[in-house]
Image (cartoon, rainbow, N blue to C red; front, side, top):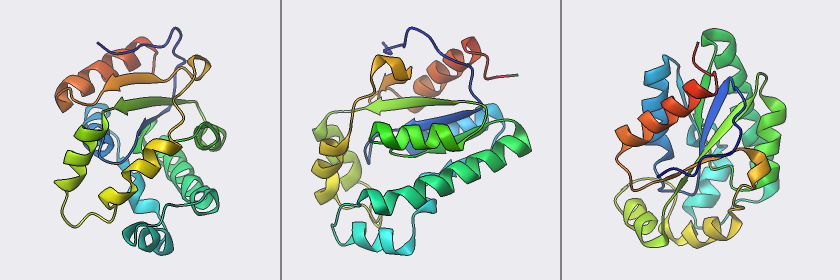
Length: 181
């Protein structure tokens, strides 16, 4: 059963958030397909230096993340201008990161947090050969994650649900919040 916020503002952008391995990209791609938008894969907006740091097992700093978040916000803005909506996957682990995205994306942003336990995340990350994010950074991501507070209006869903079930839950939620035209 999803943890629904009390009030959901209409939004032009949806950011699927959570730690590595929670299923952000899978859900984001399904949502983009369902809404007829381009899917913005947050990993594609990292600098070469940031990817190298992560590949080497070094957690990113805020200084590494600010330009990355700004690139995601710019791409989301371009998507909104093109198709009216934007769907992106972005860890958005801290409130200041979510606030930066909110400030940089016009028309409102709805965040969807995918939650999973450490064992499930570790298993998913281990099943992604060739991905730059090593399992050794999972604990760092879990420690960095600031659970959204009620005033943020973040939709929280259990990541263990099948992706089509998650997609349908988000689309129904967005329909109620007037994202879909």
